[in-house]
Length: 431
Image (spheres, rainbow, N blue to C red):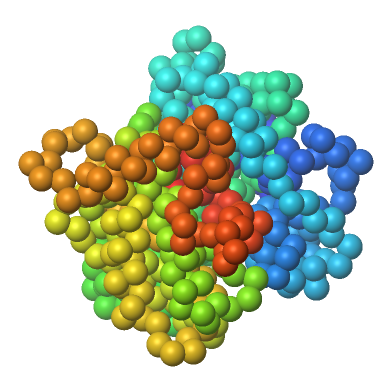
């Protein structure tokens, strides 16, 4: 697997058999940083970070120069600055990121209608039907890279393979600004030397479980007896990892991506202990989730609360409603009930998150009796006022400071996850 800093980059430079590799994974290179460098070309070649600097700010993106110091996204900014004291930190312009994302996705859509956005800066493409017009998959990948560069000034890396999983791995190996084709006949030869962390779904905990039983490479997993692997990590994950390790991935490119959940979370600059302040934050997050649900025309059946304590213990609690909702008050009430079970006197809270799950279209069957009707009407009225006069024109009284001053977004600087959610929403995809 290539290092994040690109020092072990592999790319295709000559003729290659791409006859059975119709799947492309396109990933923008250090996207947030790259957009910032369009405005600040004087910073090119320097270690640049995008993210929050106050309190417990985290790194949202790092340039490849910064990554060589061991800095990566989601790292606390304080640690990043210890590792790379000369780094230049930029707060970020998420509206610009959404704008460039739309431009890039339009380029993809002009080449093939089979585009599956994964996030604001990456997508799968199936170019099976584009060969007659645009050439072979490798030629199409080269064309995409050139168009992205000429039309936006940004660079991207592309993996070309027979399956989505292998294409995604190939794009990561090709970073930055590269293209790697994995011929179908060489799929396992490409995968097997890679570390087990290259398998989709293997995080730190699963990697430790695999290492404990002597599995360090993808090839080790591919040849492991299923029964032994099942005992180590469970039947569902064992079956999936063995299939992936052998290059088997039957998933096709889907042009529409149903949102699985919508949520927001916030890491605080200092631990919260005041129950009233914690509940105000819970209401603020519930309101943001509800607004996004209504904008997307969705309702959620399950409300999930995420809580991280001062000692980094993280707990989630979910509550399933009798009827799905897009009403902030209902979301807040359910999350608040869950919170009451988790917060004791003097408990220090580092992070709170609220998420709506089990989503469905809001017009998918009218309710005979809607217990949230009055609240829903009120919140939709607020949506209309907000659309006309801007965010914060109307807000719940609970979100006012003593004395009547409104609590602003500056009072609650978002962490990297919250920022990512905002960007995804602006780009038209879910969190």
